Amino acid sequence: MDYDFRFRNASGKWESVGHRKGADREAALEALKERTPGGLCPGRYMSRPRSRQKDWDVFDLDGDGKIRTSAEDAAPASPPTSTGKHWLR
Image 1 (tube, helix red, strand yellow):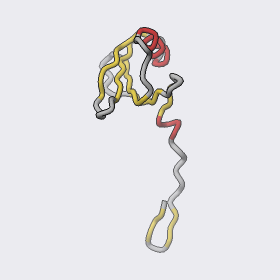
Image 2 (cartoon, rainbow, N blue to C red):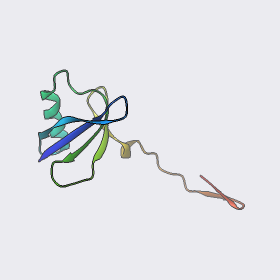
Image 3 (cartoon, one colour):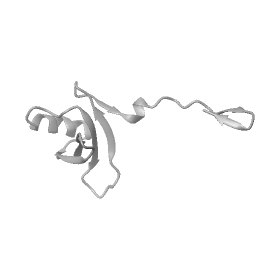
Image 4 (cartoon, rainbow, N blue to C red):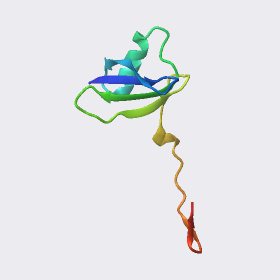
């Protein structure tokens, strides 16, 4: 499958990094890293298959080149508790 990749630059705008084929996103990202001089910068990225899919998957690339998704970072939410007429989280 062919994947598009975009990087969030310092001004907050998404810029195209390129596209690569791979069995999955990780394989396509590895192929893109190999073809990019100096490798990919750590930071915020998003990717999607190059089809008519409109939803992008957002992820972070750390300094070691490991992918970290926001779902991995999310802490389990604590249930709200009642204190009289108010709910606290």
